[in-house]
Length: 382
Image: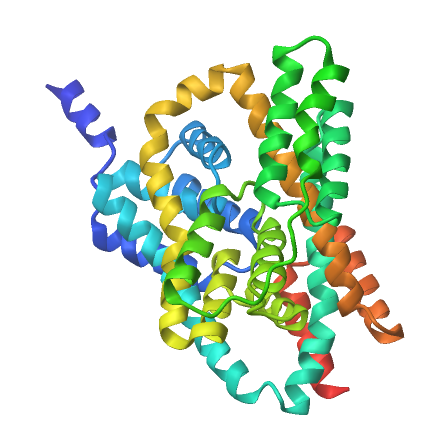
């Protein structure tokens, strides 16, 4: 009897939906610094402090989040909620992590639409944009160091970058990259397979005329992005530029950079950049539609992928395909960083801001949110 009582005392206590909601609302309000910082905060909150998960359980869910497309830190929140309270926990944890940032970004977007012509706002964004470029470069470097596992993957990344420079369709590039990486496992004659499988990357999209704004088109565009985007939230830049700047012509390069800057200075998922863009092109309804569309696939994929994860982990072929997709995503990210950098770094001042930001990020690992806030203060004052 005494042993049974000790076992009951050691068993995990049930977690209420209210507790899940309050904790993820807190994290969604204070989680600055991007996906890596968000995941570190979750590990501290749910493994070290509250012991909702063991280290191994946390790592298992992190691996699961990295195997499916979408925002990894948001998917971690959804996984944790699902593990504690099933479907209700999945919905509550994910929504509570997203909503604070979405509301804050919508308020900033409303102010941006109304006041962006003021000189002070222009000066702030002028100083913040070089910091955004430095943050993207840091994320690209850190992710590339772990993603480029072989010369074959490096070659695939280079071909992807060239294809994207020549206006190749990003989804075709990612699919071809995954197939090419998988071919190294399936086929020993790598050179002939590579030539055959990488050929589709050369497909070039014809220039598109500006499309009229429709809420359903906004929803489908962001739902597509949320369904296929692997890698860091910063890879989102490539898809946003391809769809909203080049294809639909709903945004300018400047507005895209401004959206990314807002995503950097606010807490929560980087994907709330979609909220900002939705507000710019469609007001309050556009912000709501864009937010739901880009995050909805994450909820569906987390719920559906659980039973499949053991098989995916054991499959060398599936793992190689994902490696290829991630390499392709990073290639798109690198090209977009270069293209946006040309628009953001335009004189000696912006060069200095970008260099100082890069040094603080790479050498001293300063939180990117502080750099953005500091640059905004400099832009306001100078």
